[in-house]
Image (cartoon, rainbow, N blue to C red; front, side, top):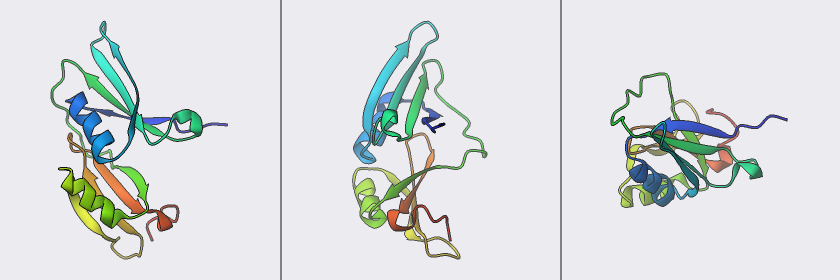
Amino acid sequence: MSQLLHTMLRVTDLERSIEFYTQVLGMKLLRKSENEQYRYTLAFVGYAEESSGAAVVELTHNWDTDKYDLGDAFGHLAIGEQDIYQRCEAIAAAGGKVTREPGPVAGGSTEIAFVEDPDGYKIELIQMKSATKGLG
């Protein structure tokens, strides 16, 4: 059986990113490792370990890189939430950036919101009651 384990994002300030994903989004820092020879650090964050079947986010910090071109191919991470309205209020209160206020998706009834991490990666918050139905 195959399983989605993680999505990797390159970040410019690892500690700032860990703080965002743990303190603002409520994930846990699962593990962290450094590779001095190749000058990078990996940090894995998530709501649960991969061994439980959960997918996690790998934050990769290349020590000698201070800027990335995010391009336009990557879309977003998606997180199911029990209450996206309350979650967006908490994210904004913690200094996070809400880029699309909670509400129904255009042309549908699924309730979504968007926030941005410190490097500009988009994160979609989807109301759990409709998270597995698609955006309709």
